[in-house]
Amino acid sequence: MEELNHRIKDLIIKHLRDELTVEEQLELQQWINLSDHNRETFLQLTDPDKIDKDLKEYHEAKTNVWDKIDARIKILAIPEAPVPNIRPFSRRLRIYVAAAVLLVVCITSYLWLASRFNTSSKARPMVAPIAVQDAAPGGNKATLTLANGSTIVLENAADGHLTEQGATQVSKQKNAVSYTTIQTPTSPTVVYNTLTTPRAGQFQVVLPDGSKVWLNNASSLRYPTSFSGPSREIELTGEGYFEVAKNTSKPFAVKTRDVTVHVLGTSFNIMAYDDEPVIKATLLTGKVAIAAAGKQSILSPGEQGVLTHTGAISISKDVDTEEAIAWQRGYFHYTHANIKDVLRQLARWYDVEVVYTTPVPEDNTSDGEIGRDLNLSTILKHLEKKDLHFHIEGKKLIVSK
Image 1 (cartoon, rainbow, N blue to C red):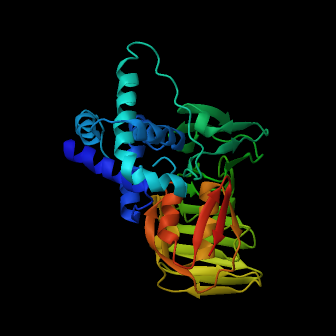
Image 2 (image 1 turned 45 degrees about the horizontal axis):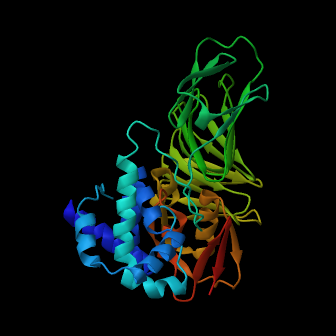
């Protein structure tokens, strides 16, 4: 425990001096996100106003700083390693912080422990959040629109039975909504529902035939609540990963923008956002046919069909299917990806607007894999290069040299 305390102390000091490496920032981020205790401790230790006040007291103090540090840091009950958002400090503070930050850690930790253990049975007061320039990752959020137009905000709904739609019971379990046929449909009328995820949201749906769809951020899926006809047709905007239940007597089709993907039983990903220059269908298992503008192409596993704005379909073989479905596994995964493509994904997941103050060459690419549960500032640390800088201002991500 003592080694951990010293390690966290060193990381916080390096943060205040703006000297953290990418790996160290990830380590600090993980420790802070582990508990409310860690987060509040970090926020108190790095509050610029508090630091400024303590620095003034430091110059007037005549006590032994190092003895205080050793005495206080040993009693810090700090658990271990997803950071609240980190903001840089002014140059004026950095000049002094190298000399006095350990005193700040000591004093603030003492105040934190005093407030923590003196509350007894009283409710612990809320700690006012510090205004930081960062963006938290998205999560499991979606809205279900029923046949009559009413809506259910799924992240606020309790698990269990939600409602009935025609001959189908609708239920929710954690981050998924599912449909179960409870009786034979007696009406020929087709009842549709729509699942919609916001920017910074994702959700899963289990369709009446058992097919599973993972819906990425800023997407929607329109589908019948029962597949009573000769085929199974649904409509997608945005991006979704599909695991289709096999049924040769009822072909499965996904319609999106200018493309229809015909399926018998397979797993595949479709990316068809309005702000993307192309539509991509990536096949993992089985076989699909993609049709657009009167043309049709067959995909085999490991292939990706790309539809351009001209309506042309090209087939890429031996593609990195892990990159196409990384979002469904909880990661961003890039292989020689253009930085603009990467930033469009980040903009949707962190709900920010990308603003370019400098041209970005097409050959500016990025490689790697990193979790989607990290704050935006941590992701940007991995993307920054000597000729590219990122800065967050509210809901804007500023890209500059």
